[in-house]
Image 1 (cartoon, rainbow, N blue to C red):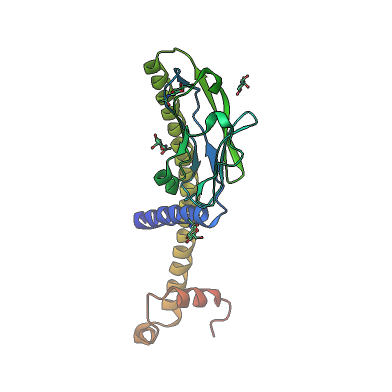
Image 2: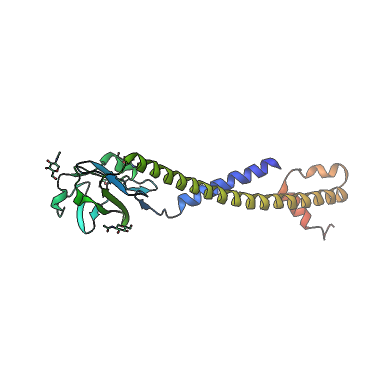
Length: 224
Ligand SMILES: *[C@@H]1O[C@H](CO)[C@@H](O)[C@H](O)[C@H]1NC(C)=O
Ligand SMILES: *[C@@H]1O[C@H](CO)[C@@H](O)[C@H](O)[C@H]1NC(C)=O
Ligand SMILES: *[C@@H]1O[C@H](CO)[C@@H](O)[C@H](O)[C@H]1NC(C)=O
Ligand SMILES: *[C@@H]1O[C@H](CO)[C@@H](O)[C@H](O)[C@H]1NC(C)=O
């Protein structure tokens, strides 16, 4: 009985995994949950990535500050056309990281004018990154970011666990109920069999075949 419950559990997990793999994957573009703060002349990385991981080296990536084009990547290379002159020679993506869906932008030698809301666009989806240029204790900022991201991932694991648990218990209940019903009918048909065919005659029918037991159980009304 215990092994059946385990089997039901494994089935549940597999069905769950397959439904995720088969279903249409919904990609999200994610930026940092907190503004990025830097000082003038610093280099900054504006974080942005696709979730779940996806090779985006063949996609178009666009970074904008309000309506100014900060950076565009197209046809597997930098596309300097229409780039705002203020950003010329100061922008780059991490090409190796793009295989994992990471389209973070490196912006060098920043000025006060660079401050504002950036949008990162890939796969027709957008994320926003706010850049503050000024003087704020950077250690404090990082600490806050870490806290937020742990809370978020913790929450997700919690939800997934509950969903798996619910599916697991429902399926194991159905399984257990089916097993009980089958055992009862099997028991009945065995009783019946021994009444109708006593002695060595019953050897002709092999035991342990559930299909046979079930079919003989159904024909209780016509034993002759
Ligand atoms: C990107 O395009 C190249 C050539 O067009 C192709 O060989 C490669 O498999 C593509 N990669 C992805 C991840 O789609
Ligand atoms: C993306 O790449 C940058 C630069 O290597 C790195 O700092 C950042 O952590 C990466 N982000 C993700 C989500 O992997
Ligand atoms: C940074 O930008 C300033 C102008 O905003 C320029 O004078 C300076 O040379 C730049 N520094 C580097 C390392 O490019
Ligand atoms: C940036 O976006 C935030 C909301 O996400 C908004 O409160 C703020 O005013 C925006 N800043 C600028 C310069 O547009």
